[in-house]
Image 1: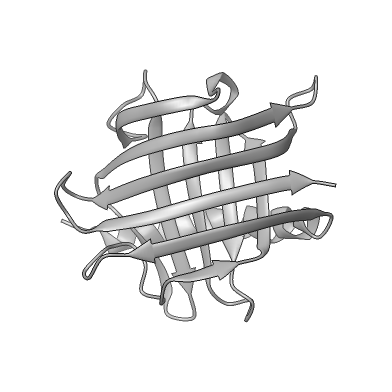
Image 2: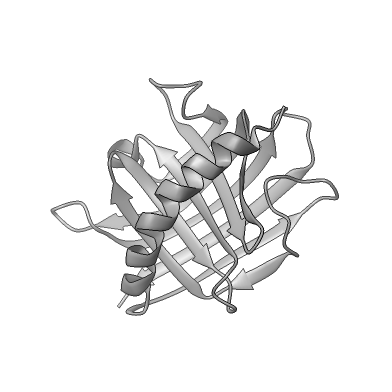
Length: 166
């Protein structure tokens, strides 16, 4: 079952860090593209490509942020453990809370009507490019993600993230 109350708590935390991350994205080039099968969750916006993108590591998570041109719609993908991720394909990725020792994911989508998240996430993550500075800052990133909410057979949310810090 989708737990919207949990989403609001997560979104509140995400909104506090999202604005600061978005400011850094002004010095980057990227695209955050997503498509949805009918009924896919946790997004209620139409499939789109957003060009305000930031990829950064914070509190053990690799955060992939996209923001709509109107400044109201946004999506965050959190991957854990962020510092250990490398290029490659990660299959059977589960919610961060369900998989504390392996690769985990959480997708949060927000807009004027609030924020949404899943109680249980299922995903496949293909990281094609991941470059970091010596101190761990992400400078280049490219990935394809297929996400399903609450069941591995639920409708898919597909996300492609490309980021290049300039």
